[in-house]
Image (cartoon, rainbow, N blue to C red; front, side, top):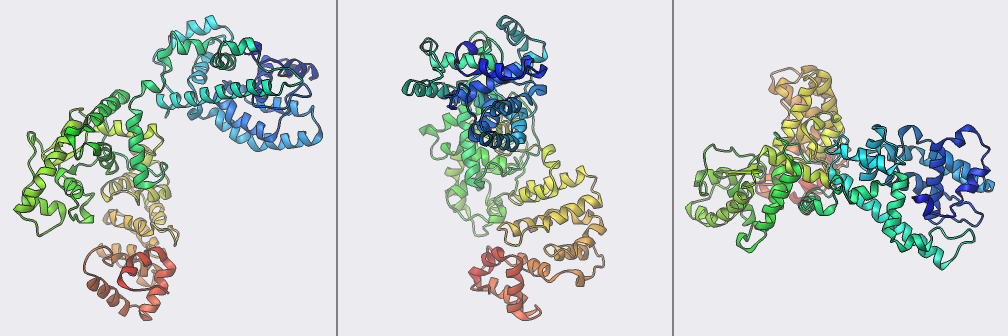
Length: 598
């Protein structure tokens, strides 16, 4: 037990110094005192005076890092831990008391959030909480052992994966073991006047055993041995999750696309929940097989293909189009993310689509039979990769189309979430605020963005209030934001023909999308006052309609010159308006045309 392992923590002296009030005699307070003094001493608090002296740094670590990692605390007993810290600080000079009081107050909110956040649970803390709800005596190892067996298949907290608990447990074990080892070395090198914290007899059993004893005392007696012995299957470790290798590869792909795991990918259009861990292992086996030489040159691209399919909202892609991109053929950027139809009953060997279909897929009018023949080999090799993935039942390949099955979509989402990539469900995306939705959808391919925008409005009854909120979010882009044009482009994905007219009329005065709203009303055949549209909105609408990515530079420059000729004040006035409204977009579109903003 931990009380016989951590010695000279000052616990007995501390309890003697208290005034004997009933709350100080409560077992929960005494347990909190043991934990707090033990952890402070373990982390190197000065024990010269017999009690571990708290410092603001140690207190913040105690409350926000160590307690949430190592200690199970019943919800009604949380307040006892900051209270112990305060009582302990009272036995030091005024400066210490004031600094500790400030540290406790500053950390109070983070402490409560950290202790109640399911994402901070370890296997030990989770099972201790379940055992407590069953009425288990957490100080009795026999009662713990007996009742633990009844928790076979116990559900996890909402939103928590087994890999989350595994990862948090592995980290906590490492941190605690290192803290114990450092404490032993520290006392050996500089023997404290108060006496050693760890005895040689305890350390002789192994640092890991000391850490396990501490966890038993701080969660449930005997639990550490049970979770590494008879009930080890209840607390799987890293070796039980081989698919984490694939999860890491998908995280790398996401970082290549977005640079931040918090930037969400679009939710799939359809999912079918299966046994996520088993399916992920099957997918990993296929990916590892594809990395072998016989699947070159595209076998190693399997993680990229899986991520690319998911970030399309799991819409099917074209084998031929993807192979053409790998072979550095020119593909119209406007077609890269366009979904393809999955034909029924198109099994069997892969065949490259006929020339007219290739022209439609790639956007290249000059293709002929010779081009189709050149693409045949790469497309067949890529189709072989898709077929191996399809053998798992998580990917489909029908004719030229390949994509994730609904169960495959659920599996890839699981793998992304394992590594904390924001991969919302459709319901989660529908619950976002309009601003959150606009910021996310601006980064997505248009097809899933349009679907999720429509779902968001539909979830709110397509009311005028919902439309007004969403349109305001599209117009609320900061003028200097690099993604401003992408957010404005979301307006074109909305079914404005079905929008409440009042919402569109209210948007006329918006300095960003006012001209978009005016155009939508005119398309509907409704009257609208163009005078209400601010000049900045008219300028942005003009900028966004310029051919910014394709076409000869001469024709693109001519389009700008024509627009500038009709702008009040000419090109100089237009440039000033554009630069003030969207400097990044103005430089991006007009810079290649030789137009320099003022």
